[in-house]
Each structure stands twice: as structure tokens, then as C-alpha cells.
Length: 211
Image 1 (tube, helix red, strand yellow):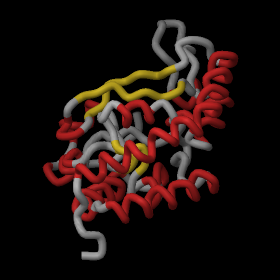
Image 2 (cartoon, rainbow, N blue to C red):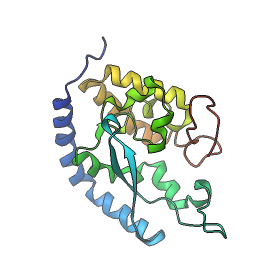
Image 3 (tube, one colour):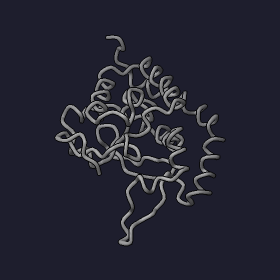
Image 4 (tube, helix red, strand yellow):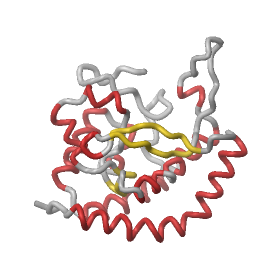
């Protein structure tokens, strides 16, 4: 096997050894991003949403807000594409909206590398094979993110997640982190055509359904 399976303890130690100095180095950027969100979007600064973690156990993910609260006359929020602000597009393009997830990693709810934590309602729509993406902790970045991110189909994304579950190792995580830095700088795969980010996963019968 090219990437022999890693050790969960080593993975956690690596996360912490990387995260603590990383938070110190990134603290000015986190502060600047917080000020920008406060200035252009107001409070709350943080978007908080329940997501499935390891073995599907729910946790609350933290992100910087990228959308306003615009709604229709009936009080229903407008579609994401209409609420995503110019600042939000900028933050997403550079993945700055993901910075608060570093605190999820510090709490042990996420890892630096792993399948991205998606929506709770997706759990009942996964096939048994796709559900295996929860056999490792969700990550800030992952194998699917460096191989297409939001520009690939859900089936391809899940297949990449499962490949990671079966092959993850310390050296594979290092490779993914380095490739992620390049992907962020090149701004590849940020969104699907016609979508604010990516289409809504409706299940395995139709890969093209929208929200």
C-alpha cells in the first residue's frame, strides 16, 4: 500500500503540534477577518451550524459569516447566491471563512485533514459505503478538496472521501496540506457553475438536483 494506514494518536498529536503555533501565526489574520465581518456584515461574526462528526456524532462547526440575512416579503431567507456578499465571496475564495474551524480542531471535534463535515440531513441519504466517510474525524481540508473541491459531483467527492478513509496516513496528510495551500492560492474549485458553492445533495438517484 502506497500510504500505510496511520495511527489516530499520531494524527491527533500532529494536529495539536501544528495547530498551536498555527493559531499564534494566524491570530492577526483572524482578528482582521473578524473586524471585516463586523464592519460589513455586523453581528454575529460566527456562523454556527450542527454537522455530523466522527461516527456521525453531531457537533457545532464554526465559520465566519459570509451571507447577509436578506429575506423575502414572507420572512423566508433568500437563496444563498443572493445572500452571499462581496466580502463573503472574497473570504470563501481564500478560505478565510474556515479559520474558526481551527477551534473545532483544538476541541478534538475535527482534524486538519479528513472528509469535510456536511449537513446533518445528508446522513439519511448516504449509501452504506458513503456513510464510511464518518469512520475518521472530519477535516479542515481533505482528499476531495485537493481533487476538485466543489467543482466535482457528489459521487466523485464521496468516492475520494472513502479512498482517504482506506488510505490515510501521516505522510498522506502532509501531502494534502501542502496541496491545499496551492489550491487556495490558485483559487480552484471554489464553487460549481450557477451555485454559490455547491449543489444540494438530494441522494444518489439524481446527482444534478438543486436546492
